[in-house]
Length: 135
Image (cartoon, rainbow, N blue to C red; front, side, top):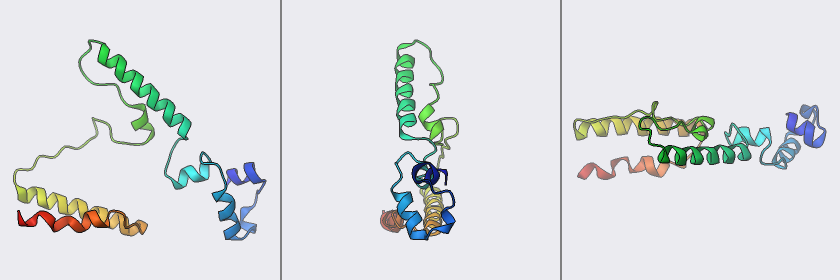
């Protein structure tokens, strides 16, 4: 709520009606802490762009160096909490049934996550779960 205090001088937002606080929060800049939290961003856009430039420069330096081995760690992925090469899980399936079971489990997990959030974006993807069963 520091954003409301910095921008509007509102120090006790609980005294205001909820709709008014929502309007004030909507009017905050995109790099405000409130908007970053709602969009699940850990850092502001400027920092993310600088990290991306750093990653690209690091990739070019790595490509032109004759060193073999592990690629440089992506700062952008670290800031965005994306899985790195070392934490990515790779799965091998021995049969189509194994694959179908794993896929069903994954889609069920996605459905549960969406229900918890009240989100229906992936509903069409999850609904196509049985599209290829006739193959």
